[in-house]
Amino acid sequence: MAGKPRKSVGTYSFTDVLRDPGRRITNRAVDQESAADIAAVLDGETRRVSCFLRGSSAPYPRWLRQGELDISRDAAQWTPFWSVRRRPVPVAAGPASIRTRRPGRREWQLGSPHLFVVITCAFGSDGSRQKTDLVVPAADAPLVTGYLNGWPGHGS
Image 1 (cartoon, rainbow, N blue to C red):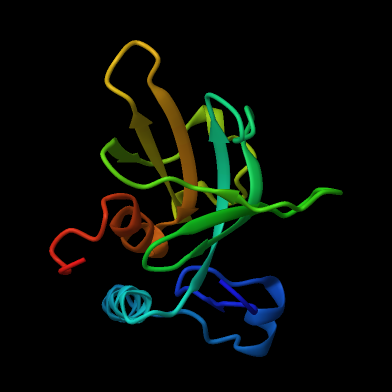
Image 2: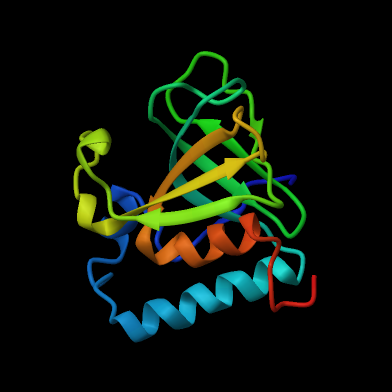
């Protein structure tokens, strides 16, 4: 994942909004752009997604932390936004129980919770299941869940 990846459809900064004040797009346009992001990743590109992360065990932070998730066809890594040591942390994909939900009280730090989705992954089959929460913009949830599920239906 060399170089700075292109941002996914749901990921934009304050300066992106200043450059393009008409960022208001319809759900249909978001769906099309989200599908385009998935197609680009499956064709070998990388996309950057704004992502808060927490996990039940190392190397993931125990409390929700803001960062960026770079997703390619075969790998994803999360880098904290605020940290002295900004080392990327690999995000595993594969056989897992994956659930999505709207943010709740545990995600109090989100400015606009209605714009986000919490994706919870549980790995392992015994009592020591490891859980990871990824909180991403709702428009980017199909891209992230596609990676976590191993791109089902996309001939991976």
